[in-house]
Amino acid sequence: MDARTYEQEALAAIEDASTAGELDDARIRYLGRKSELRLALREVRERETGMELNRVRLAIEAAFEAKEEVLRGAADARALEETIDITLPGDRAPRGHLHPITQIRREVEDAFLGLGYHVRYDREIETAEYNFDKLEFPPWHPARSPRATFFLNGDVVLRTETSPSQIHEMEEHEPPMYMVSIGRCYRRDTIDATHYPIFHQFEGLAIDRGITLADLKGTLLHVMRMLFGEDRAVRFRTHYFPFTEPSIEPDVSCGICGGKGCRTCRNSGWLEMGGAGMVDPAVLRNCGIDPEEWSGFAFGCGLERVAQLRHNIPDIRVLWENDLRVLRQF
Ligand code: DAH
Image (cartoon, rainbow, N blue to C red):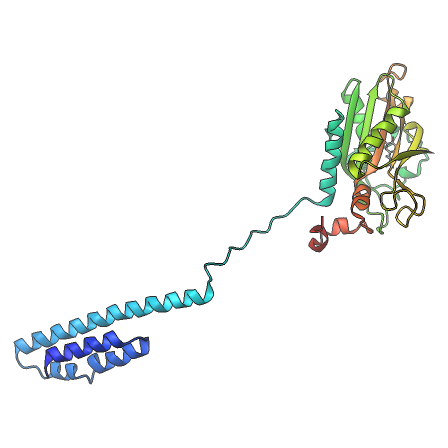
């Protein structure tokens, strides 16, 4: 055989191969066990011819390897192109947001900080002394029943309201004082559309010289307008709470019907917003404050209630289930 011609033919075949299959065919043909080159090598008798044939073998092998590399690179690029369109925009990392109750809590904090109040957070585990006694709950009050309140052991309870914060505030500070306390409360309520055994309240307390019911009304009007809009009105209904005298229940005008009467406000035009009143002189005295010199008002309101009214949420339970289909709407 003519070594040079053989080499050129082989190199041309390698050059022409455009797939791995064609390249393999060429390899078998020019380097395989039955190829002309192998047979010639087996029959070599003299050194010169042997050297020449081996040079040709090495050159062809190197050409195969180089071509293999080229074909593999092209295949990789094609595979990548099929799976990734590098011109598409990337995926955005999903970003959460605050729970509606947290959003409302922050709005309440903002409203009162703007009035010069300070915000406090108190313990959720209280003693009966702070949850009831110092707030002048009489011994027969139904809230003292273990059927209404979670008793942990003996006199220790899960607070049923944020009102114990009033006592802590008055014991820790000298008047004048303006504070709002926000946090979780617990009651042994059966779960339904408007009740849940865990809920949130915000509780305000203002103690100063010459504070009157008019200050309470002005404060609540301002806060309700911040939470629900400038067109809202506030009214008071008389009520009873152990720790206020007089006690009232504030209502805010219904924003759905504008006060004309609808299903949400049960045709009254008004929505109940919690409890309030002038701090009972006995409570002031329990905390070492002289009721002859100081007077004050207090109020309490549920955050869930505010959230329900703000967003028209008919069932309180969705605020605890953390179903993303619900929460994503707020
Ligand atoms: N603690 C009362 C409740 O949970 C709400 C309340 C009423 C708070 C009158 C007050 C208040 O501060 O003065 O129903």
